[in-house]
Length: 245
Length: 245
DNA sequence: GAATATAAAATAATCGATTATTTGTCAAGC
DNA sequence: GCTTGACAAATAATCGATTATTTTATATTC
Image 1: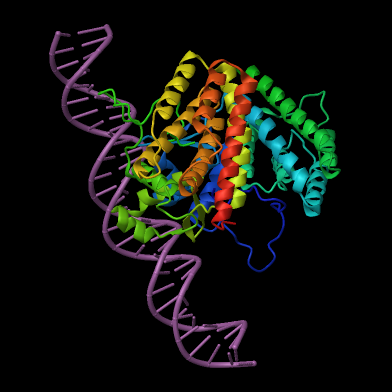
Image 2 (image 1 turned 90 degrees about the horizontal axis):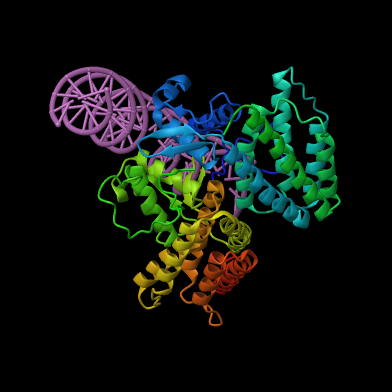
């Protein structure tokens, strides 16, 4: 697991100013920076799913040499966002109904399990981090008319889900969940302009968070499972509408 | 996921001769070959767990340039066998009691789930592959006095477990299981010269396989879970004996 | 006219050399 | 004696050029 930019860490969020002194873990090398930029480009859909990544063009686009470009792409393979074949190069991981369903199913298994473990062994700081992430998420407006609010909301949403499971003490499990969340977020951004009318997503998040902090394992886990499942169903309908197979 | 050498494919085994014509998927580039060699070196313990990988020395050892070396190492990161930090280079993934326990726990969750899915949707060919893998495994001698038999047995053992879950139709899940098996096998090779006396591992494998082929979900899954759990316990004792924390 | 072979272009992989960063060593200051 | 800072060595990251492979275009054969 590449520890330099997994973004699967527990609490810290993207807006905390660095504590003045040593704060620059990762993000240093060109390869790292490229990985970040490409990751965002893929999740946001700027780089189309399934499309080939031409090394020469990418090299020119980003004004870098081949080495760091391959380096960055290699990390995105670990993140599940890029696929690779010998002598055929890289391509953006494709999307499909089958893939969405696998991602949803595995999230139901793994994220719920990670929440279970977090509730079992998470400490008070973990609880606090959840309350903070929840508050920030619920206080943030999500306006379909203004894309920048969507993007911001998605970042906080992702942060919330990662924080929920950040107390589980299982690095591999967190890596898997992070990867699944990467793939999931891409479907969200591409197909979820608005959530289904019969849902109150804010309340769903609140229920999960409260159950977690109250250490009510079954309640919290069931709420999270339903939350993931509903989003999966919702997304599936959108994909079907747009003719994705 | 790097599709070039995941070895998480269903049936094919390492001894099938190539069908004369086009059979060379993957393994072509120097980077790929290096990944294979390094993978084996790490799982076998030839490269010590937690040790730093010096790029210059490795470059000389393998007589290659930096590019393919980094390429190969990058793949092993995806495999969970190597860790990386910006500007600090690569190191072999460390072993620990905590890691072994996480690997075991996650195998119990994921491998069992994958078996459940395989039983649900696996086809007749999947069944046949299991019977073949089981037969080859049970017919193979495992003699502690002759290391090459150990190595061969381990390869077939791994193949058996992968075949069991190869029918699940979930590439991401298979990737996760493959990664966990990588990590697990390293503990096996390092600490399991012989299995615990009160176990009949051959019978355990047979029971799992028979349950799977008979589509008895609960029986097969429970047997597999116990099998994984016992091996975990067994390994844990060996680690503790050798003072691994 | 379809299939196959050949040549040319595009693209990916690798190399050797250079630059940047980190680590280790030793001296100076407190 | 311990910390701090400057320097040197070791190591990692990057670059630009070269080589190998795949893809595309074109010609040839049946």
